[in-house]
Image (cartoon, rainbow, N blue to C red; front, side, top):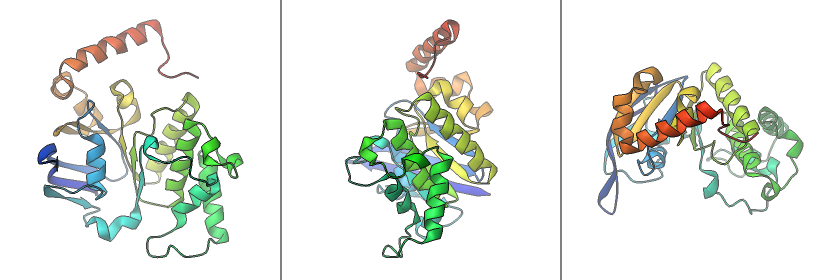
Length: 256
């Protein structure tokens, strides 16, 4: 089954294309990484899929339907930097937002909703922080709370914009374990990721972008020098040298 299909998808800002003629199909039950250099249109692609930016041409189908027909089956985790973390709400308040449906925002929270929210927080190891104000959390903890809210929604498709940015090693491991569990449950997870060095370890399907789509498919088909060179150009040589140096010196990618 296909979770997301795009055809001839083009997005323009001020009449200038920032995504051009994007065509791909993503299989259901996979962990998909959207990768490419800075400015390649990764976040714009997610926003186009979610209907958050207007498109100049083409279409997006989700589970072979229009977005409006399946919106309840989709959960979106934006970049942490785009969220106002000073908003006066507790961790539990934020996660319970995942239990509100678009058609019933005024419903009362039930005992079942509270149990689902608590279970979501437990999955990201944040249950003990339920009553903590979100502004008092670290960046990694805030990211876990947003993912817990997404889990509480009970979606089939999860779209995450750079969930690994600014998190510690423990949070990174927790997110990776969670993505693996979601895949086992038949969920589809689409993640924008900026780090080419770790992408092959994190994902089993790759969309490689640089304004246009360079390639999409299983990671072993995409991680080939000619495709990466096409997407990254001269930047690939720098990235490769950095990766080799880190491996040679056994440097940690992220602090413990």
